[in-house]
Figure 1 (cartoon, rainbow, N blue to C red):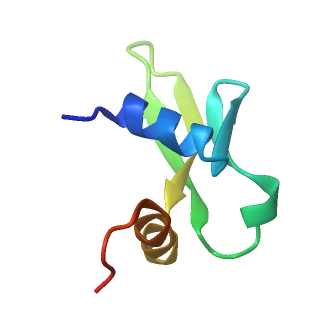
Figure 2 (cartoon, rainbow, N blue to C red):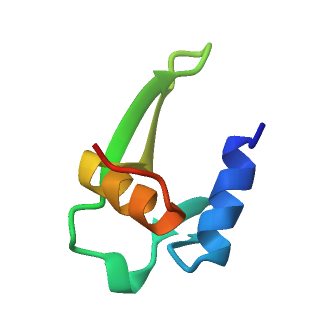
Length: 75
């Protein structure tokens, strides 16, 4: 089975995304096409300190793009 880390590496090798500053980013030529969105995660430490983390997530349009690039059928 392929892990999420392995899958991200495959997408990196295909030039679809790159890693910078500890996070994955969509390649510049794919920006602005609605393939990804930013999601915000809010959590609190045991001391009550608020922690906000933003990360990239794939949209349905992005998943259809990935399926096409990887040779899987889109329904």
